[in-house]
Length: 247
Ligand SMILES: [Zn+2]
Ligand SMILES: [Zn+2]
Image (tube, rainbow, N blue to C red; front, side, top):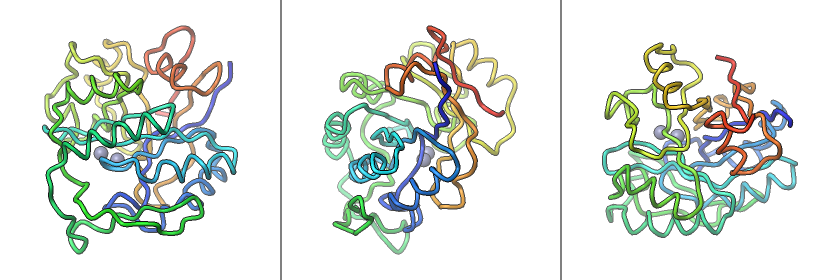
């Protein structure tokens, strides 16, 4: 087995709140300089830049999982990851059906650019992405699992847009695949204990929206090979697969 440096929660210039410099070349180029081997691209409620990042990753020797940061009806953020682009696109279709039909107000929320692997803009999403879908937390997890993806509760140590912020706990009946903590926030011992009680090895991801948020690796996965199935084991400390974080 080998340990891989990873960051599984990164936004591209498709996310309205992300910097327009977050192109495949910049994100993946910087990640390679910093020593990352595995990334996921997780824009708000959309996977439309995933293909560009997956392709650019192949060119640069970085494995990129296509993903999405789905916002539920309760305004909880879930990082959803897939092995195949096609599975991610299927989630996309369902999410677009469940997004309220609102138009993005660029001047307030920011621009939503689709790009190709070279970073050329190929389209702009007109509908508002930064909003809750009509998926409940349970429905979202179930839907992602039906598409063979994994579902990670995002930044549970933040009050806003987090499962813990919403419920004050990790519900035992919810079949989550993992949990994520924020690099810069103080660790809450009670929360860490509950994460452990649920059998999770937490991830620490950048949730980068700006180039400067991409910093040296904080999180490493011990895996037989880089695959979603292996990651799923590591997120629960199973079969010798583990996640190690710097804090
Ligand atoms: Zn979030
Ligand atoms: Zn995010």
